[in-house]
Structures are given as structure tokens and as C-alpha cells.
Amino acid sequence: MSLHKCPWVRSLAPQVRLRSVGAFAAMMTVTATLAIAITRMSTQWDDQEGHPIYLEEMGSVAVPDSFPVTGMAISRTGEVFLYSAAQPYVLHYDRGRLHNVGQGVLRRPVGIAAETGAGAFAVLDAGLRSVLLFKEGRVVARQALRVENHLQIEDATRLREFWFVLARDRSDNYIILKLLAGGGWQRMDGAARVLSRLTGLSRARLIATEGGVILMHRDPVLGTVVLSPTTGEQVVQFALANVGSASELGGSGGRWVSLWTVELGRYYLQTLADLRSDRRALVLFEPDGRVVRERVVDIPMGIGASASGLRLLAAVRRAGTQELVIYRWNSPAQLERSERR
Image (cartoon, rainbow, N blue to C red; front, side, top):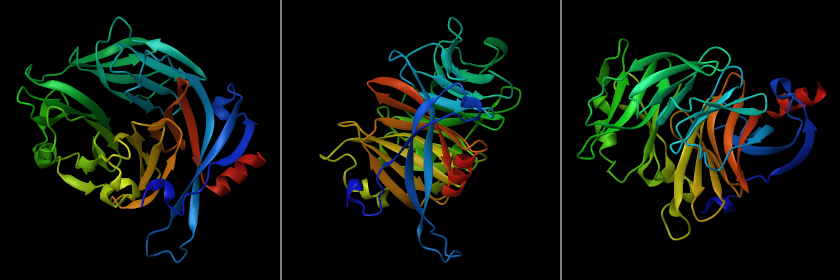
């Protein structure tokens, strides 16, 4: 059964209105609400009806097409930091505006993390083989990576105080390294079996979540797993084989790739893209990897970062030009309360 034929899928709700919300007051914008039905799957609940989560657009800003977004992070105050594999700088989004940071300093950013304080972020730069801390647009600290020169750094993410790096050697073997205090490294040997699926032509990324470090293959057929941040061993595997679009993955009907995976409350939300069209599959997973819900939208977008405390999501959308879009996710009760304010 293909995704777009799933009987439970709800249509895009035409709830369009002008709003001004909190830190986004400067961005009076037309907003739309996207409902994703979630069925309560735990047996401890008797209610088996769907309970929708709404993704409500709070604002958007154009991003130059010369800056194809590779990764992003959201701070606790709602600031967003973007990096691109094609550009040696970072874009900082704050109060409806984008600011260029790090040009002339950075070379090849491969991972980013928001820090405490306005405009503060850390970036791991593979070209400099260093972690740089920025505050107010300037580098205030720098830590060199003691990584062997024969290792090519492909991707990085930070979980709490630790950076995790995906690297490849000259024989196209992949390893994951954990940066320790003082600049030392721990090789995550527990991930060896999972990493053996990667080849030199593979693409994968690391994503930090409260449940562990996600290793997401770009090819969804190869799967997405959650790794222990202590040992690197696989603790959860996402059940993409159970997704309605599984028969389409890599088939003649489309060429699907995994874009991003983010946390959405207690769930994981993964965006899949059909390279032959504007279709995007939004797949919601339980913490144990089971599929909760899935839906296809004809919107060229990818949800790339979340801030659970603020209920914010950051996404990249293409509607002629590239845009950064901020969503707030709510339950119906929360939406009703916000409408009354």
C-alpha cells in the first residue's frame, strides 16, 4: 500500500490566518496548519481514536539558493543556526532576519550545536579539524581535534557535552568517534556492525537526540538506528520496512532518500524525499522504532531541527526559492488556548 493511499491520512487543513506569536511578533505572516493523526498505540490506553498533532507555521525567511542547507540547530530561545556543505559560513536566524557568521574563518562545517546565550553556537569544522565556539558573531574559543590525518570527517553532532564524529578512512571503512574532555577520542566500536552497511558511495548522518545518537542512512532501505552514546551499540532500529512506502523505496515509482530525523515530544519524526517529485513522506516513530503514522505531502520540505521545550521545529522548504520555516507543534487543546489569547 503506497503512502498517498493510506485511509487514515488527513488532508492539509486550510486554516489560514494572520498571527503574531511571542518571539515571532515581528513576523506577521499567513500561517497554515498541518494535522498528522497519531493513534495511541500503547495498550495502557483504552482510547483508540486518532489524536492529531498540528504543525503551525510561525514564520519564514528566504535563504539564498547558493546556501543549500545541510544541517541546523535551534536554541532554547528560538534562534536557528544553519550550515551548508557548500559554504564556509553559518547563517544565524533571529527575529525574522538572517545574519552571516564565520565567513573568512570557517572552511567546511559538518556539525552545529546551539549554546546558551544570544547568538551563541558551536560548530565542528572538518577543514579546520577544530570545534569553534561563536558568541555575538566572533570566535571566543577553539579546540583542535586530535584525529588522524588519514581519516576524513564526514558528519558530526553534539549530544549534551560530547561531540560524535562520523569518519571514513582511505579504505572507505567508517568509524564513529566520541570527543572526550581534554581533546581525546573514544572509538565507538559497538557501532561496527551497523557501520559495515556503509560503503564509500554511501551517505549517512549523525543526529543527537535524548534517546541516543541516530545514525541515519540517506538510502532509507539501509535503515535508521539509534546508537548508545556510551558504547555505540544499536539500541533501536526504525521499522521502515513496515512503512507503506516501503515498496516504493528505490523502486521505479520514485527514488526516496532520508533527509532528517528530529524529536517530536516522545516520538521521532523523519522526512523522506522523492527525488523525482515534490513529494515528502513524514513518518512518525515510537521510541522503540515502531511506525506510528505516515503521510505524504506535495510540499518540497524537510524538517531538520526541533526544540522540544519550545515545541518548535525548523524546516527547509522550496516554493520557487529556498526558505527557512519555523513551525510550532501543538495539540488541539493547546491550539484552542492560543486562539483565545
